[in-house]
Image (cartoon, rainbow, N blue to C red; front, top):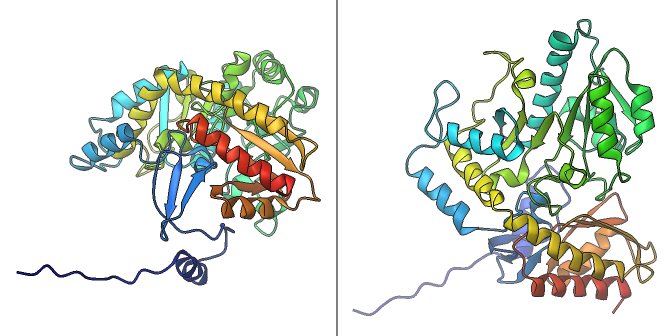
Length: 410
C-alpha cells in the first residue's frame, strides 16, 4: 500500500490578519502578526517566523507561554471538573483560597475572573465597608484615585479615568470618585474627608508607561490611610506576582495594603483568574447574594491559580526578575541620549520614552517586529517591555540589541 501525502494550502499571516481585521470591532490596533504557537519567551506565527515576546500579555504571561507545570495543572483538571458555579463547593477551591491568602498574608480571598472585575469588586467592598463599619452616610462614600490611572474598561472604571480614549463618549458616569495627582501624598491627605472610604492606587502605573511613584510614597500612603481610617487598595494586577522582582510591588517599601487586587499572571496565561484578597473585617462585609460570579473561582481557574501561587512561594521567579531587571536597566539606560529620552524600570518591567525624531512608539514597535521582537506602545511616544520571567539572559540581551539598533537607526 502506498502512503498518500496531502498538501494543505495555509493562509499566510498577512491574509489571516486582514481577514480578522475585516470582521472584528476595532477596539484594538494590533501589530500585523498572527501567532500560531508559543513556548517560553518565543512565539511563532503561521508562516513559521519566530518572535521574542517582550510584552507577556501585559504581564498575564509572567511565567512564559506553555509553562509545563501550569499546563499539567490545567490538563489534569480538564479531565475531572471545569465548572460548578459558586452554588456548590468544588475540591480545588479551599486549597487555592488558602494558598493565595497565605501568599498575601490575608484572611479571605474573593475569586473573580478579570482584572476589571477585581477592581469593581473592590469598589463595592470599600463602599460597603465605609457605610457599615466607618459609618459614612448612605450613598455618600468617596474613593480617591490617581490621575493617569488604568484599572480596566467598565463604565464605572473609565468614569474615573483621565484618558480621553478610555473615557470620551461613554458617559454618564458614576459619582463618588476624587482624582488627585499620582504619587502626591499631600494631595491625597487634602482630599480625605469624613466621606472617604478608600484609596485605589496602582503601586506602579503600567498602562501609563511604567510610572513609578516617589520613594516613600507607598509607605506614607499606608500610614495616612491608617491614621484617617481609610482603606488602602493596591491594584497589583499588572505589577504583582513577581513582575517587579518582589511578589508584590508594594513589597519594595515593605507596605501591606488593606486589599490586594490581583489578576493577569494569576491565571498563568491559561485562564482568566482574578481576586480581591483582604482580612475578614473587610471582605466580611459581603453576605450571600450581594456579589458573585458564575465563573469566579471555577475548578479550572483554581487549579491553575494554585499552581501559580506554588511557583511564587519558592521566590525563584521573583529573584530572577530582580537579577534580569538589573541587566535590562543597564542596557536600556545606555540608550538615553541615543534615541531614548527616559527609562523607568522596576524588576523586569520598563517604560521607555522614545525621542520623537526616532518616531512614535508604534513605529518603533513595528520596526522591532521586523527584527523578530514583539513589544507594545502606549500614549504615543512610550513603549513598554515586560519579558516573561523565564526569558534567558541571552535572549533578553538579543532583544534589547534589536531595540538599540532601531532607536539608533542602524
